[in-house]
Length: 620
Image 1 (spheres, rainbow, N blue to C red):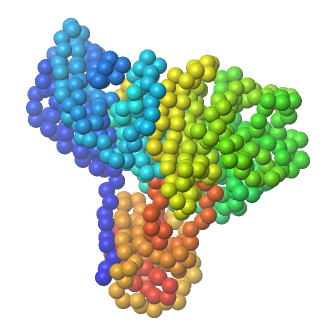
Image 2: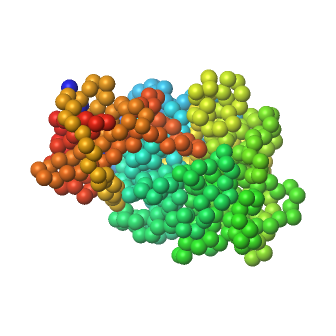
Image 3: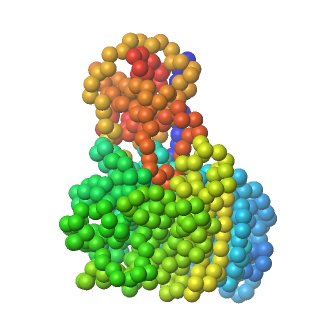
């Protein structure tokens, strides 16, 4: 039996073909304000959106109203003055005939009916919603998943009004131009490290894939000049999630690198249950503060937020429990306090610097102590959003605000989660991983309990104004972060044309030693071997036993390349995203980048002491 050869078209290419098709259809007709052209889900991955196109005799602004089930559910947007109108439609309901009202400057109206398909099972339905139409005010609560679910946006009453059908993950941020930036669905390294970031509009159009040589994970930020800070790693260094890079927005190239191994002793402040040498820091957030020109990074496995000087990369300060850290570091970098109400953060996420210099973060509350790392007794566990006031001149700290402790295990979330700031007294606290195993609260990420029995997933997103709960959304899944965003954004402009891939994936590390092996003949059916070829890489996908020796061999005449395929799984202390995890632990997906290769290569696979011909060649 030969291996299966799958050609996988990049979503950017698929979208460009779809765009060319609907634009060609539009150009064949004559479409007016009274009879416009409409296409549902024009870019294939955003099913609750549509695009309306038409011409008017003069330049004029058009007001768009997407009707809700009641007035609070309406979404409105007014276009710029123009004759050729390209109008994105957001906020449609699934499995419904949606009414979109177009109003011109004279007050005339035109109605467009858009029929949508039902929601897939991976778009979760709320278990509870505290409704608040006036508070949400044409905004949605967007949540990016970590368990089996899709990224989705929910309105004031919990109705899904937007989702993406791609397995895109981690933090979702809106850029200054109105587009969003989020991790791609192209897995580079397990369990969740992807090729980089997509810049896309909510209509689903991907303008740019920013590829990162060490992969992308968790978080990113846009700088005032438009460049992008992203979390990554050095895949060949023996550790993960401890590198930060600055990406040139125009080219995608890496302009600057910060490696935490250069400034921190690995594992110095770690709790033994939360850390290992491979995943020693587990950076899950980055925040750029323009006032101090600094980066704040959240090391979950060190229970510490580390602030670095942007230019030099040197440590400015460290926020966290100083116990277990070297004295020379606690004396120099850690804050002191006489605030008896202050509680340190443990396993924290989503650090940020507020306009007044305060530090805000989500305190997951893992163990709540350092020297004797035992879980809090049952019934006493809690997570919270917390705000600290810091004085970097005197190196003092006090606790200014918190929410979540009073709710205890009802919302306890041992990993992921976030907090957001919308002005003084206005906060979002998202408890992203409130799980239960056999009816008892999960003390680790819910995915870590799957072998123990029946696990239920839950997330709770709470918006507060002066400590009053204004809106609450509970969903039966784990979600990395929640973010409230307006659907329509004045800065956003839909631009036709093909998207781009920027940056580079890098050259895949080769195995230099030739391994003795004999010809194995046909590939065993039990390996379920596939070669999945993309435009910039190909992926070996098969089923192997844990620890089995596997290599990919490329041959082009006298040119040979060997790539070791790891089949032994690393022990990750916190699986923040499980949407890429295969249910069969024997399945291995290993990508090999085409960078550094040129020509057509025959693909062979070594398994243990036998070499198998796949019958497949790849073009590089």
